[in-house]
Length: 262
Image: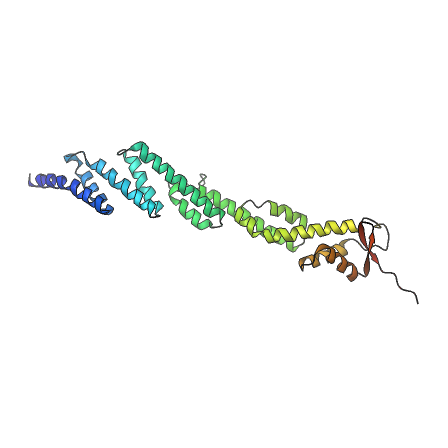
């Protein structure tokens, strides 16, 4: 009887202590007192409701402080408990999860993969690997773009410009696309130079004195890489191969120099 009386007395003190802890912002004490009320709920029916109040306030403060994992955990407990304002608490949980999702995607687009995955941990909790978790989707997209970028660099090294352009256009992640801006300029310049070289040589290509083909193309590419513009690259490459640029109306071609007479 003494124990029961003591428990009854303590149960009567807890709501006041709980409210005081809540007013003072000591939500750890608030939760502790509410858990004690829950343990004594056979003495009264107020414990679950008081506990819901503490969880709600604690979750809101944690969210405002930038601790989304802890906030979502408490809010999830609140929704699952069935106490408090179930509809409102569920809407809050959904809104927080949506905001967390958006923050993670923004981090991912900015190139911060690991931070995005860390932020998504509470959203992926309980989902088995391979079940389409968002963190897995982000990792897959990142890996695919990284491998495509590696392939792009190799194609550029081998001066396979059209294939490199195709590889460049396969990048579908904003951060990787931005990293490849320099590569795009190089590839487009090289392709423009090749097109220009072909145009220069359209007239007189059947003439045996015209310098054309792989050697001229390779010489032009090498100069493009060094920073020359397409026209200068064509002129210097032609001179290197023993030719001179001849203009025929709007077009030009590289013609072998004829030996001068005595």
